[in-house]
Amino acid sequence: MSSAVLAYLDHNATSPLRPVAFDAMAEALKAGGNPSSVHRAGRAARGRIDQARRQVAALVGAMPSEVIFTSGGTEANNLAITGTGCQRVLASSVEHDSVLKAAPDVERIPVDSTGVIVLGELERMLAASPVPTLVSVMFANNETGVLQPIAEVVRLARKTGALVHCDAVQGAGKAEVELHGLGVDYLSVSAHKFGGPTGIGALVVRGNAPFVTDRRGGGQEANRRAGTENVAGIAGFGAAASAARNGLDVLALRERLETALLKTAPQAQVFGADAKRLANTVCISMPGVRAETQVMALDLAGVCVSAGAACSSGKVTRSAVLTAMGVDSAVADTAVRISFGWNTEAEDIERLIAAWQDLYIRVQNSDIVRDRAA
Image 1 (cartoon, helix red, strand yellow):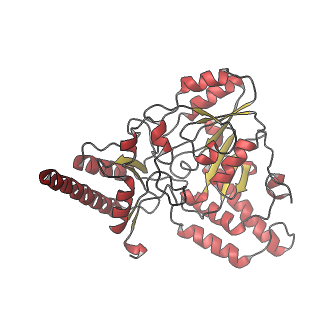
Image 2 (cartoon, rainbow, N blue to C red):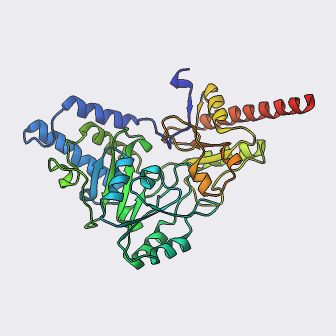
Image 3 (tube, rainbow, N blue to C red):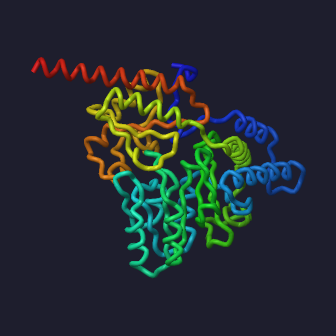
């Protein structure tokens, strides 16, 4: 089936490359040049990086000097967790694995049934030890879209002198995300979540917040990340960041989708529905139908969705996020994630609704036939 007839609704995994990002990358690749060279080609490459740094900084309300380019969100998260010098790391129980597995003995802060961090527990955990502490809480969850109360997290952390890292990989380009507005010390961003290329991201470090690099070599990124910069990737990142500054206007699409699916299956659950969420994300169960069955059936109908996070080498596993929220395992096994992006149209939503309804009705009818036969 050609991509032209696909309804691609898995933007939280990867959003298709924006044309402006493609053009910026093609121009950089054609021009070549090492940004550390002082000749004309090198200066031109450096100029592309400087421009992109300004563009990314503008997207997340930071100064250009605070942006460190990385290979993506995973590296940015790892750098934040390991580069602060803190002896203790507290992270929400719904964080991405690139946070939870970035250091040994990460202490997990519980969330409530909507997926929102329990602030009282965070306060208790902060008070339990005087050692230097980093608190890592994501801006928005990659599976449910649930937004975390980052301002309150910062307030509690500051009372004990703790530093704060925010994984904003799913938020940047979809909602207003500002390093200084949020008050955090470290912010992670990834280009391919809003229409930039894969393999490029950034860790944004506030002012003089402590940071120790994990690699040595040349003096790239102001001595904070050695290695020749990925000029084409960075150029595409910057172009996509500029294009994404207005966010996504997709709330009406989400409301249309949820209304239609819940009308078809009133017992279906939208996870995190009672919390503030990104407008582009729907995590919903289909009663009695396992997630992998849904993903395959919808794929055959030309609709791309995912089961949980798309970071497990193609494996469909039970959602750790829904488990942390206390969702029954049998229900969690029936949940899929639907996520919109910069090129999502109403027709994509209608195609998903039709395919989802068709699958659900077919399963229900087959159950009725089996019950009668029994």
